[in-house]
Image (cartoon, rainbow, N blue to C red; front, top):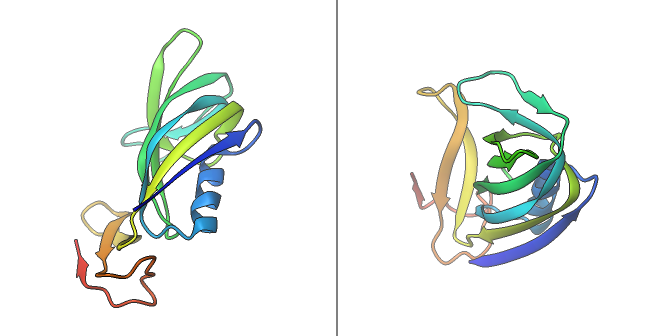
Amino acid sequence: MQNYTFRLKSGQDLFDSIQDFVNEKQIQAGCVIASVGSLRRAVLRFANRNSFSEFDEFFEIASITGTVSVHGSHLHISISDAEGKTIGGHMESGCMIYTTAEVVLLAFDESAYQREFAEDSGYEELVVYHFANTKGATVTKKKRLSRF
């Protein structure tokens, strides 16, 4: 297991910057364990909605959680406005950092997360692959030992 902590700056796209970091480090399987900061724009998809909601105002990042992978990340965010009202949902590209965002990730060496179509939900869903004694394995280069 490897941990990473990094800071993003004003004007960066939060989701895209996290995904860029994951791609740069070639993280096959990981999770966001903590994140704080602020946004000047938020793009969220709420539960059971097919469209995104866009908000052009200032928010504090209360939390971010989810899975990350070079094969696709799935992140949720909770944000609060100037009155303390908190909303949350599926984070999309377009969430723009206002002052800063601090992100802490964990990466798991012997696993890979992929997104594959699931008939039960109709969406690309998480599939976990595990490897034995293969630090930094990739699904395309190592034998799949198990799938959950």
